[in-house]
Length: 497
Image (cartoon, rainbow, N blue to C red; front, side, top):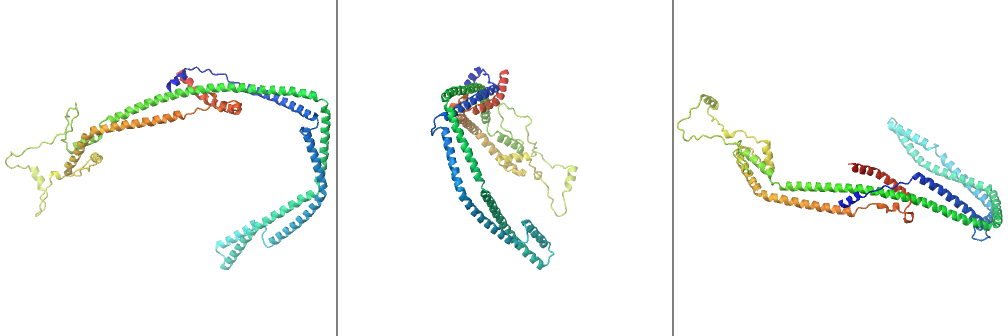
């Protein structure tokens, strides 16, 4: 990967000249206009030739003439049938008018039963009665009457939807009758007569064109051949302009892709190198941490706790570690077995102990030095909790706690080497697992990587015969311009440094 990126970086990239888009559009517009003019002239000559040819069923003039004659026949048939259709139309108007009058009468009868002209008036009356009932000032009889009236008004409100439907039917009937009356006025007869005269004039014009064009049919054929060649030349000119423009664009896009690829390869190589360094540092850190002696924190806490419980406790010295001169020593004890006689108490002591006699008949309780209050520091309690031992709550519990601490300390020291080896083996297995996962992930990234439009071979830069198009070319060009403007700056800065 790194060698391929170095090879690409050594390759000199020469930027091709970008085509002038304004010049291309102007040339293409001019060529397309000339091509359109040539097609128009050729079509006119072809029409003249079709007219000049002898009458046949396949020529456009023959087809047009046949269509006009068929329309004339239809107009004649309509004019004959117009008289009978007027009578049928009059009968239909009478029937629809009678139906309309019946609908209007029904609606008037239904509306006469309702005292309100619209739904809004009815809703206002219902609201008024509701407010009167809700005030609570009405008599029971009046309130019942108002409630009955509200119920009746709400039933009447439902009938208004029927009025709207009836009005729609009436409007539809009126519209239908109006259409029938318009047909009865017979504007169609006049229109049919105008169409007949227009079609006859077109037939006469076609006949005159055929007679005129037949006289110069040979010259028209020569002109058609010349215009066909001219039209083909104009088409090839348009294609050449497009091919040259898109070929230059593809060259520029290929160069831009190679520049981007070069920057990507360099970035990928730098990232891989950085990742390798990080992996190496991380592996060394993990192995270094795993190589440390096990139970160091536990042993440290145990020593600290033992120093508190027994100031005379001396931990095993590490190699090259001299005994400390600040080590705690037991208090001085005097052996009084060889002293004879009675100890003489001082006056201060007699005065001090004189207050302990108390009342007569009661024995005084003299306190012993070992029965004073005991205080366990928070740090000692924390160390005991860490080791899973109940902290001492009195001086009498200190020996038992000390024995438990010594037992745990002995176990940790005996198992220290084995636990260290287990930690180291576990760390190595974890590193192997991480390396295997990273290798699998890198394999997926390499095999699943796809570069679109690589080296200009994608469909966006293909020729029209290969499925490409001018729209795809322009879209790819705009995308490349937006992408390369940033990466070129990055490449130029890297080359300067």
